[in-house]
Length: 134
Image (cartoon, rainbow, N blue to C red; front, side, top):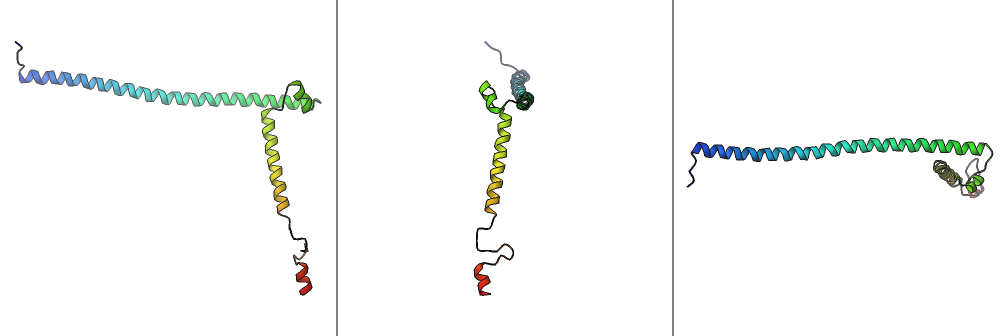
């Protein structure tokens, strides 16, 4: 038959069991913290890598634009370059679209800012009706 533990033995067994459980919780907490740390570090690494890649692409696009402009300066036309297989660089297209938008906006503003009444005189702003009656 099993012997009944003394009060001191019972408390010691309970303490040991509790310590094992606490160690398991500590291990779990450390593992979860490691996940958080790794995610934060890899997010930083990813952002740095994306920034480097973007820089490499930007540099390559600038070189392409310089070479394209050099071909134009050498006497090639944009249509000829397209026929050969070299369309306008993406960077140049974006700049052209931005210029067109600015030009269109400027033209629209200049046409709408002109006076629309044909009967007003530019110097005084009086209308024909006001000049006749005054």
